[in-house]
Length: 163
Image (tube, rainbow, N blue to C red):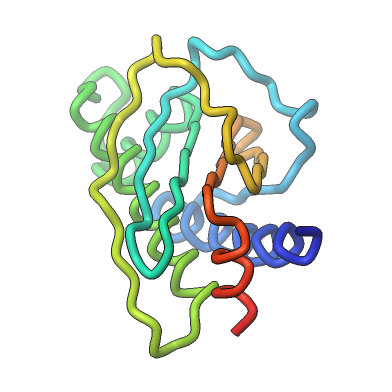
């Protein structure tokens, strides 16, 4: 399990850095969970399933303010013109990009994978706490980002990643 944690942490940090830098010219730094300035009402969440070659779920939590910054950068629009639809689109696209890049990093070059469409999680849902195999926390422009990965078949995940 420790080897899996190390591999996921190492690969995910690179993917997070690359994704935020490419999408919005934002640098990230990995932090401990207790270093996050977290107010649950200020976070938006999306999730998606990796459906092949293994089944795992990836949850992404981003600060609302960070989403606004990304939308401003990507669409080159002013804060007052941002719509909730744009926020939701950017949240989903960020998760989709992160998941695709992570799977590309984790799997052998010739291994195909499948992802479901990202789903926006309502603010009133019950938090994920079962089968979490990995959690990572970042600051992007001093705003919180968290990623949680869950998988029921831990041995299958470990086996696949030891290519």
